[in-house]
Image (cartoon, rainbow, N blue to C red; front, side, top):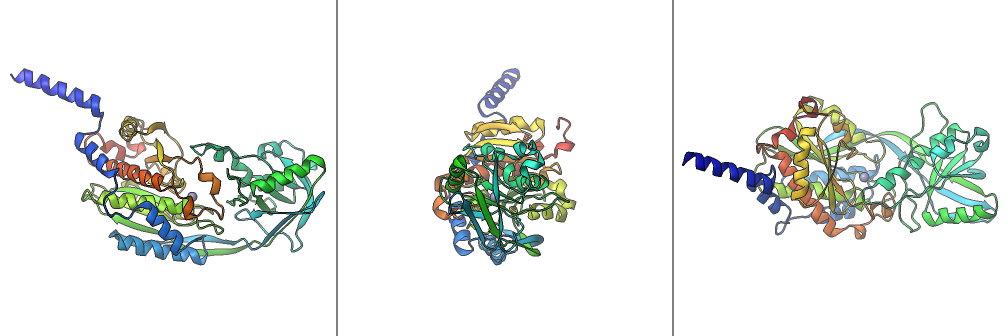
Length: 465
Ligand SMILES: [Zn+2]
């Protein structure tokens, strides 16, 4: 009889493993519960709408930045988070001023344009020069300096629409490195086709990065239809353009990371992050009020299950857009407790639904991530990927990251433009993403056998990478 019951138990275990993989039935029912909204809960959409309506643009160092910090403190407090506080972060303070970009020859036309974040100013009367067209910084690198000297370089590369953001990643070097490469070759200014997939007349801003020891030249983005106009003019004749912009660097300012917790049984931490700041030209509904809404709503939903095993810590980071000040300050301020960070996650890809699960976890834990993806009906992606920018500072220190990849197919239509408004939020996407973040955070916060390893830093794992 004993042998028979042992056999039965073995068969039951095997069946369980086949059906549920490493996830226990209790955990699977928790996950089901977490993926549905509770009656009356304040969802991600309402939270994003509140931030955009009550604060609006919240660029590092601006008055809106301070209002966003106060919004976050009062919102987390009102929702019952514990240990709600602001941690000081020093941020750069840049002001874009005014901009005029116009074609002088062969046709007189004014362009819709926006300065790239961090751009230096032109002289008061602007800079007028003949335009040199290239597709990318790589192409410009191959040109002799004599061909670039004295010109306004125009980067015409297009942003391909993709769900996983790879089209954006391929296009973005024109903005980040283009002006530095052009300056090194002797160019006087840079224009780029907006990095984005929108066909509207809003130009997309975003940070550019000058090289130490190289001259800094002004840089701006044209809206897509204005880039088309420039390219049509270039078909028939050399084009002269004048760029005048009055941006200025105002030194440093004070901002803050805002933190709230759902205390767990242990002081180990599952960190849910998003960034509180936005670019100055935009209310940033998708970037990143959406992410702020997702992580707050997901943590709230988790609290319904009672006290988590690990502490759920929501971190709303300062200044992601213009130098990742908040992510870097967090790692410095929490250096002594980095080892207690079990898993980090970040929401910063807009309001689309999660469709794939990537990670940067110990190889031994990857099968669990795959099982989770199957359970949540998501694609299993890659392990060892770069994920969130703010939590990337923690990832560099060896903290494991779970990456819930949201569909970014339309995200880059309005990304970093004045048109990133509440009506562009995907309500259903936000609801689904909240459920996925809540489910993943629950697994990461649990003490169930077989899940614990996910909490062991990669360096400590014998099978670690
Ligand atoms: Zn963002």
